[in-house]
Image 1 (cartoon, rainbow, N blue to C red):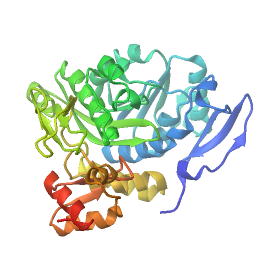
Image 2: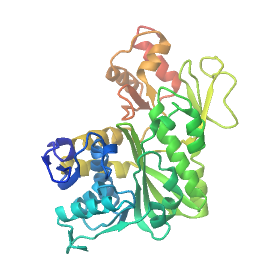
Image 3: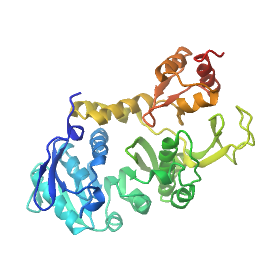
Image 4: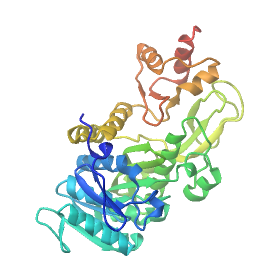
Amino acid sequence: MSQRGSDGLLAEREGGFGEKEIVEGVTRLLVPNVPSPQDGDVFYNPVQSLSRDFSICVYSAMRPRTFCDPLSGTGARGIRIAKEVPEIAVTCADRNERACDSIRGNAHLNDLLVGERAVEGSSIEVVRENANALLSKRCWDAVDIDPFGSPVPFLDLAAQSAGKFLAITATDPAALCGVYPRVSFRKYLSRTVKTEFYHEVGIRVLAGFAVRMAAKYECALRPLVCHSSNHYYRVYFEKKRGASRTDNSLSQVGFLSWCPECTFRSETAGGPPEKCPFCGTGGMKEIGPLYVGPLFDSAVCEEALSQAEKRGFLGAGILLSKIAKEAQLPAFHYDHHALSSYGGFGPEKLERFLSRLRGEGKLAERTHFSETGFRTDADFGTVVRCLRGGNGEE
């Protein structure tokens, strides 16, 4: 794939009024020329350019007719969708007047607005309003919650306002993955422990919380694709209504028992076992509630990957390529280094180990959650046996 889009950062020049012009994808954006996102009058995070490339690919695969970004900042995500994904009517909103001015300026820069009106062939509106107030009044096919921090304050109304799709970002991963268990329980009503597969735990706690919040309104959420990148988590859901569908989505929320000694894990209910079923040590930890079902829809992942390749989005393409490979494999990946540490020897090359698992007739792929992580359909005993076999033990 040719390297282009946000990965290539590309055009950058000094603009007036403390702004600079950049290009993401094929979209020109005027953004604050400040040392860090928090220093600007209007929020723009360059680190999330990968997330915006990724969202272009996913929304191209899902094809909503209407889209709302109620926390727009400079409008980077919404403007890009209006520019790069045809036939989607986009609403960009922010309560900050300067942000709305920035959004309009970026819409004009990309020939999406003339005055206050959308140009022929595009459909975009800019609304100055508090996010929750706006979400309480209207509905869109897709609602995208991309806050600074936790999405919790917006989830109730977003789940009701989204007709077909809901996307949420959490930029507070430490509160989700077990680093701060008390914060996790306060915000997400989940008991967490820091594990070696903590990013997957974090994104599953986030997904499980969203499913439970939506269930109050008989709304069923099903993850289509997610990713953990650059200290944030992002999940895209399909939404459907109905009591039976909601009950089915809730059935995918459960608890996980994890052994900190040997890393064995299993879904449990009613508390963790007194002793680890694999190594026999006590002190197993229970994590949850969290989402224990599939995090990926293979068809959406493959189409999003195709979009990344067509558009030349190198970073999003690499990420989606990993996701497409792991999409069909069971929940809760393993960490090669943690397993090797339990076995008492240094880790061999991960690809050699995965080849040995495949030689046993098992599926095994790297995971995007960790450079040293892998996902497999092999049971834990087979994983450990293959690990020992590569280190001269059988």
